[in-house]
Length: 300
Image (cartoon, rainbow, N blue to C red; front, side, top):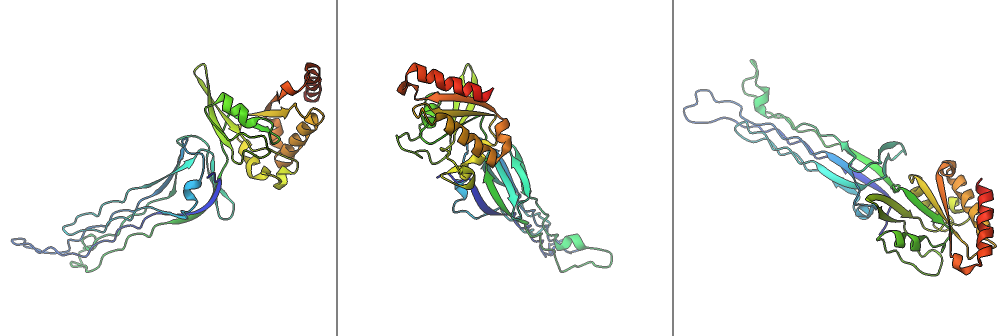
């Protein structure tokens, strides 16, 4: 299941407690405090993994916790430190606090951030020996793990975003250019989630993104609009598919989608745009040439 927004609580582990212990060994002239220090807690580290493209791992997981540090041991032995908790997130994940402030943007593969920083373990009683305190009978507790409630929002990262009205042929195009096999059918909104595919050409790779069909008022949530319009904000190029089979409505559809992009985010209109006419086999060559001419006039 494709999920692109979740609320999660991250919690670092607790530092290990120090130990109260005494040295009692044969042939040792001076006994005394012998308790070790506790180990440090584990951090929460989030990393952008290019092999993940959804936040579905957090559909039922609402809290992620790191390990606790181990308590101190006898004979001045230090408690073991806890392992850091590595959390893999999709590239393009935005991390917000619960007040809506952007904390981190994992925009590049391999980028990582420590969300919850470790704290030390508590000191054992051997740590508190002084000239006026030869036998301390107390130890220190470890630091409590830090907690952070965050909102994760995914905006997919792709080189080319394929947009257009429902049934314009977006899924067919990405299936021909990449190894992705999305559902293809002759009814609107066949595509319900964005599809990412990698096209290889002459040793170079390019990531394509098939965005679910857009309709008027998509920026207000009509159809599947506002839920997926955000995913084309990170693309470098927009590939706008126009259904030539709808000859009389083709140019109006183009204007309507461009208007929705502007209403959602005016910066989207500044992206480089490639216009592709689909289903041209349904028209006479003269009609196709007329559409091309109209498009050229609008884009000059």
